[in-house]
Length: 223
Ligand SMILES: O=P(O)(O)OC[C@H]1O[C@](O)(CO)[C@@H](O)[C@@H]1O
Ligand SMILES: [Fe+2]
Image (tube, rainbow, N blue to C red):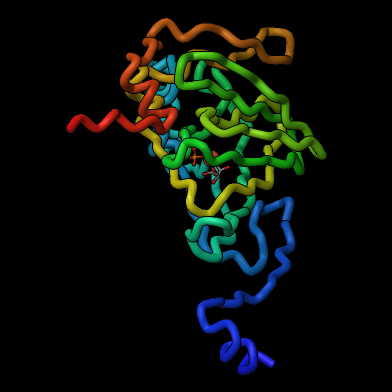
């Protein structure tokens, strides 16, 4: 059968279909092609309260705060990467644990997340500073449209486990947040067992050229 296909469609490379079982306790998927972990010490600079971060370092530095188990068939346009992110609950000062956050390097690429366990948020920011928040509880799908910077936040007492899926050629740009002084909003404890959004006073509006670049606009070529 395959030989027939190879003769008739020599440019088509068929990949094998795969099923991946999600382990809610470990956040791992079976048949994963890769995994990575972010420890507390890798997350320096993300949180407003640097003194609180420093005070936690002795106890927390080696702890894996979040980890990703993924299936990445390839990075070709038209294909998909998917996997599971598992985040510990916790706070630095009053600020809930977050992922680094990024915009896709090909910024017009979207993403979906599906909550599996725990209580989380997707904190999103457009290149020109609009802020949106979508709550991600178990069995909630969050759509991150093209062009939105996105960062997950665990606002619960339990681990947050989410499935994600995005176009295989998206890539990630992690600098866009640091260059703006962080994301425009931070998610903190509201003192009543919940969360609230506060402004990040260090955030700076991006200049027009940076905004245009994040929207993927090419400069006019001059002759
Ligand atoms: O890549 P970051 O911003 O560290 O956060 C991890 C999350 O984002 C992803 O990179 C997917 O875009 C996942 O691995 C995970 O949900
Ligand atoms: Fe992403």
